[in-house]
Length: 390
Image 1 (cartoon, one colour):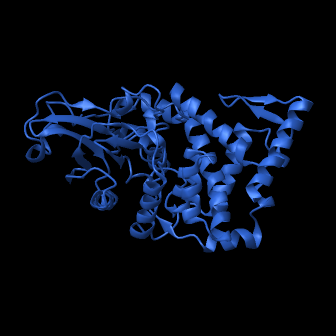
Image 2: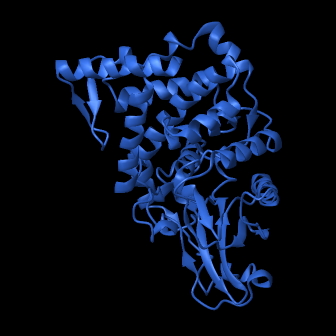
Image 3: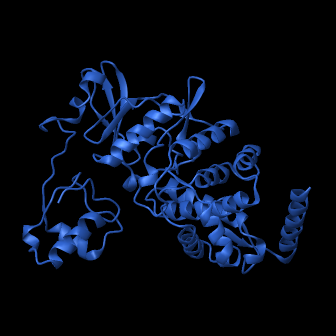
């Protein structure tokens, strides 16, 4: 059994092994060929972990010099000869010089930095099947449009592109966000949607109930029946970016490039391909509603009432998904990021849905309000509603 894992749970290996044993295959006949020498992740089932510990595992690291065809030789015609040791950027290594950047080590694709005679290059795993080829084509289209670095080749599942020296953009212009989302909407049409709007709302309801139980979020009160069916009928699925975080935009030599832009509509999560409003919602949530750029982006895509309604739904679902995602991160930065989304959700949900009046600290911790504090909050909300209607 061959797989790039195991990852957070080792469920790919575990599920197939369960199936084989269920069909009568003896455990001793099952041989695992994983992509690394590590153990199962923290979310592995006890039975899977017990089987893994005593199993026959055979690992051939393609990065080692004694491999039949080491990774650094796959692109020698592009990179020239190796001038320094291959550097593994997987598991959050790409952000090692940016200590405040959240990473998710157990759920990242393999990536490497290669120093060759012709320059520095990044190699990232995309897939060895049709999905990998489709990602390569999307990467080429994004480069031609001026949004991303140039993908130079796809071999054995890895895409190679030049290493771009730069820093995360402190601010991404609204015009660039609008152009980027418009391009994806028009060019990367998908055959089917990932999760339906109903399924996304169920996810949001569950995540919010787990993380912010003080909020009684009941999506059926707003999006139900004909209203939800009308919105669902308006969905036009595309291969979304799904990584609209500020650290995914790199400023280099006077321009801003998008990174990590081809994989995540086909990740192992429930989102999948969605209406471009998912990325629009991501941009608005990441910027913050008070940001003028967020308002410009929202206005560009949500002028009609139905589009505004879809955007509001997607904002809640996006923030709830990110909350759940980063709550499972093994890093301190990821945990802090989950609390940031917690505070964003608290800002989105109307005060009437809160079971008790609360406020949030800068770290996202809930604090009960005094009577005077609650009155001040309600007064502020009335002012905001009035200002928003002017």
